Image (cartoon, rainbow, N blue to C red; front, side, top):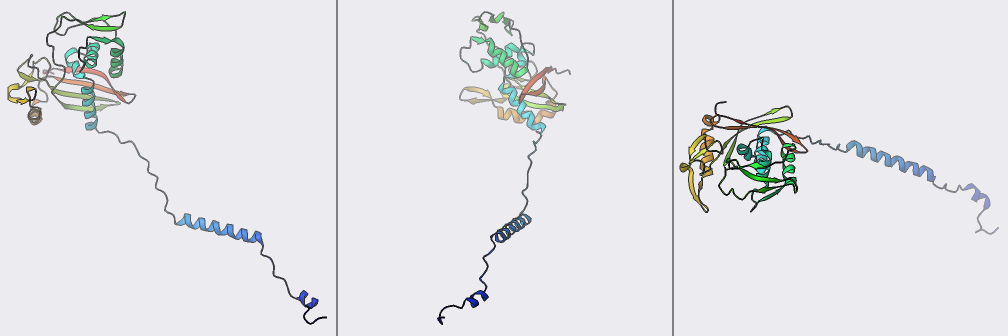
Length: 264
């Protein structure tokens, strides 16, 4: 036997290294990974779940919204035309700012009344508020109101110059609000009054006039400041206006309207 040739007996005595167990290695890796995940979860700060609850509006906020709703829908016209003449109130809103508004579609009138009052109305001729005959003739064939051209005289002002909340309160799911208003119409009176007809006087208009680009007009800054300062004495003087509102489809509905006289 060649001295360099390995001895077969010695080769059998030397143990060959075992191949690593793949299953064991995989199991160790999985256990290590699970331990790592557990440690991460233990030391991780829990997520804070914030549930946003709907904040209930204050009465002051609701009052401002209602004042805007009245102004936006020209509901001061109720003070002139009354709650029994919603068609006239609707036409007043539809024609506001429209030049030569001589024909008004019945569909537009009904849409306004349903949206603001949630009511249905029956159409007929509309008389002038100054007892001067028919102001709008209702054309039932074409479902429209037509302005009669013999009424070129000035009318009663249908927009107050200042509004202040007298009282506001919740009654179940409804809101009852009483408003004090100031009106001025030089064709009706030389006084600033609590009604559009110029009857219940509050201030002499000449004390509040100032010059503007359009001529002489009421200084609303001065008027509102004085009225706010005098309000404790004036809040139950003259005419006030009571409203009961509910909500439907995300907007206000006027369910009831009343004029409160000086004696009440």
